[in-house]
Image 1 (tube, rainbow, N blue to C red):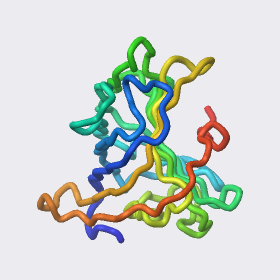
Image 2 (image 1 turned 90 degrees about the vertical axis):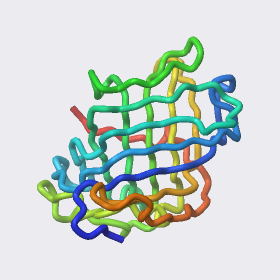
Image 3 (image 1 turned 180 degrees about the vertical axis):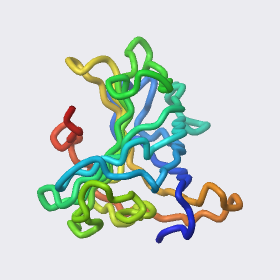
Image 4 (image 1 turned 30 degrees about the horizontal axis):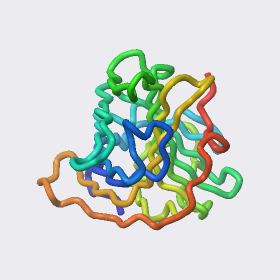
Length: 215
């Protein structure tokens, strides 16, 4: 549900890793905490079925939870980055976010996985309901007119985070399912967020479905 009067929504997500090619740094079964802000006043710079809400994702922080077997030190993004929405792409409504040096020259500080340098951090949401949101208004829509708050329970096919290490010629991946998320207005009193349980689903191959904004 929308948060009345909120242009910046704060999210805290939790989940568990189910795949890792860097097992010393991130071990299957390790849990994580992810926090980030979304500015819902950002305007769609995309066109057609592809929406790009520039500077929408801000103040991101990722870490493994205490008690994890892996030693990964986590990371932060103090700059801002676009949120990509795709409307009815092959029967899916999708939300994707990518944080990498290819997009961000400053404000991105994620640790290496051992000797393997950090390449990219992803958030990926896929809904088998192609009517989860609509980009029919085209370029110029504000994010709050399309998606006032992330209703993660709608994303039944995949709700995950992914990290890439090494390089794109020989990438090493770690994937985790998002299992819960809380959200609240940036101006709200703490602890008034709404907790939404994630529906389970098979993890799609990100390498097969990842789409990027051209240019």
